[in-house]
Amino acid sequence: MDDKELQNRFQAQVDAEIKIEPKDWMPDAYRKTLIRQMSQHAHSEIVGMLPEGNWVTRAPTLKRKAILLAKIQDEGGHGLYLYSAAETLGISREEMIEALHSGKAKYSSVFNYPTLNWADIGAIGWLVDGAAIMNQVALMRTSYGPYSRGMVRICKEESFHQRQGFDILYTLSRGSAEQKAMAQDALNRWWWPSIMMFGPHDSESTHSSQSMKWKIKRKSNDELRQDFIDATVPQAEVLGLSLPDPELKWNEERQHYDFGEINWEEFWSVVKGNGPCNRERLAARRKAYDEGAWVREAASAYAKKKKEQTIAG
Amino acid sequence: MNNKAMLFDYVLHLADNQVIMAQRLSELCGHGPALEQDIAITNISLDLIGQARLLFQYAGKLDGRDEDQLAFLRDVHEFRNVLLVEQPNHDFAHVIVRQYLFDEFNFLNYQALCQSKDEDLAAIATKALMEVKYHRRFSRNWMLRLGDGTAISRQKMQDALNDLWSYPGEFFEMTGGEEILAKAGIAADVASMKPTWLANVTQTVKEASLVIPEGDWHQTGGKKGIHSEHLGHILAEMQFLQRAYPGQTW
Image 1: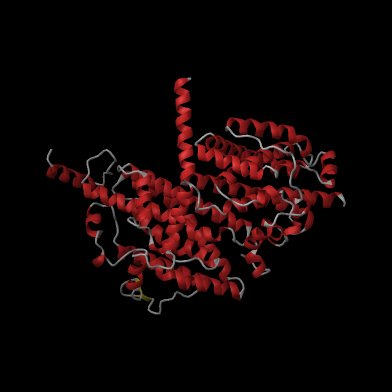
Image 2: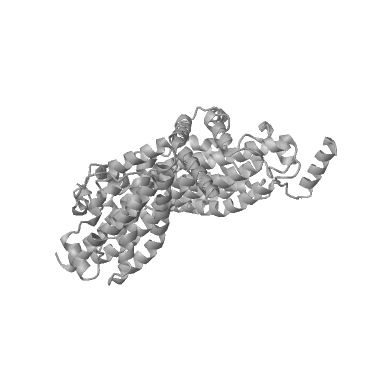
C-alpha cells in the first residue's frame, strides 16, 4: 500500500470513530502531535503537584490535609498513566522528562502562578481542575485509544477534585470576614489564568484545525472556554463571590455569557517563561530528578543483580 | 495521675507518632526521586494521617477536645511522639532508614495493641496493622535496594543508619503511666519488643549489605515532651492557619 492509500485508510478509520491503536499505521505528524500533547498533559499533572504541595504541610485541619494529599497523589497517578500512554507511541518517559527539564516541552502555564493563601487550594480545585475537566471530558472521545481510555479514568477522579475545591471555597465564603477576603483574593488571582488555560482563540491556534480533523481534539479552544464560563458563573453566585471581569454578563440572544478580552500579552509572556513561578517550578522538578538519580541507579543495579542471581540459581 | 489521664497521655503518644511522621513525609509530596516513590510516600503519609485522626478522636473522647484542637493547638512540650519521627528529610536514604526503623516498631506495637483490653484501641490497631504491613514491605524493600544497589547508595544508606541509630532506643522506654496501663492489658509492653525489633532490623541490615552501628547509647525525651529542635519548626508550619486565625471553621 502506498502512503496516500495508508493516509486515506487512516482518515477513514478516524472518521468512522474507530480508535487508533499503538500498532496501527499512523501519519508521522499524528504521532508527533500526540506525543507533544500527551507529554505536555503528563508534565502539567506533575508540575501541577507543586503549587498544591506548597500548602500540604500547612493545611488547616487533618481532614483537609488528607484530602489534599489524596488529590495530589491522584495527579501523580494521572502523570503515570499519561506517560505510559505516550510511551506506546515510541518515546520513553526519560526522553519526555528531559524535554521538560530543557524547556523544550511545555506544561500548562497556569501552574506558573503562586499559591499565596489557603483559599488558592480551593480556587485551583474549582477553577483549574474545572477548566481541565472541560478539556478532558472532550478528550475521552479522542481518536487515539490509549489516550482516550486514560482520560476516562482521569475524568472520574477530576470531578472529585473540583468538588473538594468548591467545598473549600464554600466553607471560607461562609466563614469570617478574613476567610471571605482570602477566598475573594484567590478568585481575583486565579480567574483569568483559568480562562487562559483553553489556549489562544481558534483563529490564532496553530495546531487546532489539523487536530480537529484527526479527532485528537473534539472541541475548539473557544467552545471549551465558553462552556467553562457558562458552567462556572452560576457557581460563583452560589459562593457569593465576584468574578474579576466587569464585562461578564448573560447574553439572552446568544444564550451564553459574554466576557471581557483576555490579556494575551500576559498569556504569551508566561508561556515563554516569564511568569511569576516558571523558574521555580522547573528548578523544583530538576532538583527532585537530579537528587533522585542515585536512587534510580541503585534500584536498577539491584534489579540487575537479582535477575543475574535468579538466572545463576 | 488517674487512669483516664494516663490513657489520654498514652493515646496521644500513639497519635503524635503518626501525625509527625505523616507531616515529615508530606513535605516530600511532589519532590520524590521518581513518580512511583512520590506516590508511595504520599500514600504512607495519608495512611498515617488516617491513623492519627482515629487516635486523636479517641483521645478527644477522654478529654473533650476535637482532633484538630489536639493536633493544631498544642505546643512542643505537650507532644509525646518519639524523636525519630521528627528528624528531617536530609536525603532519600535518611527518609528510607527513618521509615524502616519506625515501621518495624509500629508493626510490633500495633500487633500487640490488637490484643488490648481497650476495645477502641484494639479496633484502631487492627485497621492500622494492615496498612503498616504494607509500609514495612515498602521501606524494607528500599533498604535492600539501596543498601545493595551501588557503592554510592550503600554509603548513603550506611551514613543515614549511623546518623539515626541513636533514636530507636527510645521506642522501648516506658513511662510510668504506660507501665501501669501495660500491666492492665491496655497498653502494649514495648520494653519486651526490643529483642524482636532488633532481630528483624539486624536481619534486614545484613541482607542490605549494611552494618549495625556500634554503641548502645540512645537519645531520649520525646515521650516526656522534651524534643529535638526540629519539632518547633514542624509545628510552626503545620499549625500556622489555626494559630493565625483562631476559632474558625475550615
